[in-house]
Length: 154
Image (cartoon, rainbow, N blue to C red; front, side):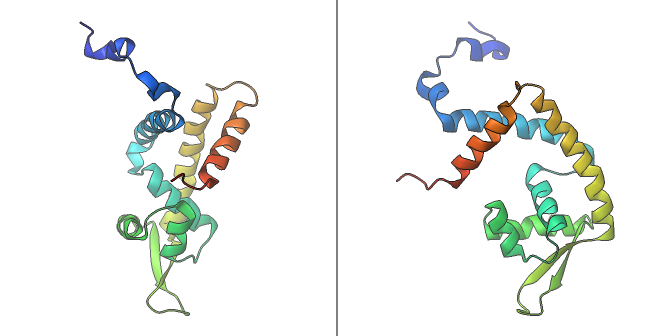
């Protein structure tokens, strides 16, 4: 009987290891867990970092526009913005065009925090590049971009 530590060595995964979606999900789990460990002291997840990055590069976007840019559900964006607002990283400002909408901006603390977190994220990313051969990073990014743009098969 295999121990829990090496059970995956003896498990027959059938077609799973041939499925792009399954492999993407497994890679995402490894990446996100590593990201969480790297950024645990800053209390940030990959999703929250995505929001911070978009807002830092595009100050004044509405919550809906940030959600759309990241491919997130608008309702989930409210919770993310609430968390970032409590951390004093992002502030909401009413838009002049629609008083029901809020534009998002990094606070002064958010801009300082951005420098620290972006350095950590870049270093984390570099650790994954070490697993790749020359040219594979660009190739992988190209493939992932094309997959992200494809229409769902029905």
